[in-house]
Length: 320
Image (cartoon, rainbow, N blue to C red; front, side):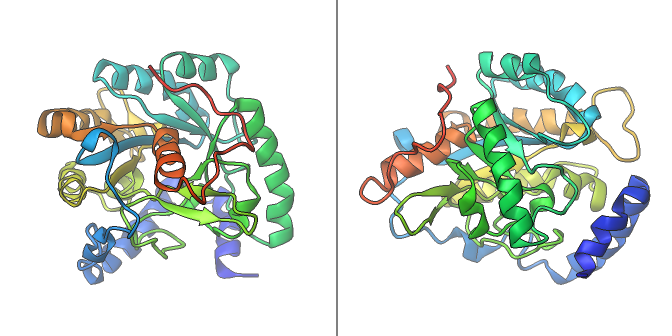
């Protein structure tokens, strides 16, 4: 058994707070060695040969995503979505289809009706999805069923595990299980790009890969113990200057909406202040887009000759 498989086997019996302390200790030592590649990896700014820019000549794309890991996070989704609407933003919420909670149809309807996106987040969120090719293929059948039932076109693996070759079994417009650079993830091989890229199948079809390019909230505030959102702002400024995709992943599970944040939470004001900064600093220079909009732009506009229109799964209507 691989060490990583052993960890996820015993993980459920280790209290979350203890896991974070262990990760924080390891991450603090790693951080001292990774200053040249995190949070900014200069080589990731190289533009692909095919790149011709964002829609309407916007300077960069800004995309918000949320992975909903547990019941607590699911119960906070509407509150988080309302906060974003009040600030003029929309985002994608990725739900675990066979995890510890059931995603109410009423919540998915609320999100869709208000211009948000719904995606699929792993299958069970237990770290076993990539344990073997046979197990992944069996899970892919179930994942595709959930994608179709939710009319979802996007997927992200738990814990940012990824195998782009295996992911070709999913009927998706895009996957979002990679990152430009993140040495603190258990599978730390980064895509080393702040631009979307195409993952093709042998039959000419494929999907768009959307790497997250801003540190995850859990890494920033819980593992590394940051007390401000300065690193988010610094990385955003750099991505915007390079004309890339600024994609962030925020977990409602860890977002505290009350007066005090718990040991495994961060105050929502850090996220709210960040969104305010985006609006005030960049205004119309940013293309505020859902993941499916970015993926559709890449697949239909940038690769018209060899990237056929996605037909394997129903596409939901664009947000207003």
